[in-house]
Length: 122
Image (tube, rainbow, N blue to C red; front, side, top):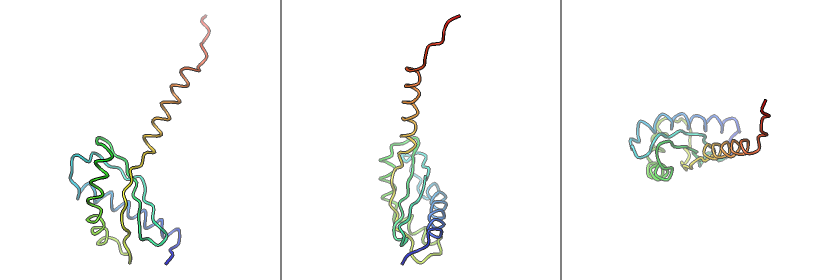
């Protein structure tokens, strides 16, 4: 069964909103840090959802382990909220794009400092 791209995106957006609400309320583990959901990607048949997250104040591996332990529980909570025939299986992945962007920005700043022409002294 195939779904339209627009419906697929609407469902992904709704899953992201619902998870953003459920995670802080249902998963109360201080070792997880502050989690931000970056995006949700669904397979065309809505069977699987990749949930990309970033974390602040904790190791990403710790948050990933907790998410993997709680994926079934979060799936059951989504099932109660979403009014669709198939609620996708959740697969959590750490999104490193923010860290990569910061590292790239620092490299650019360093390069600009080393290659900047000296200003003539008056």
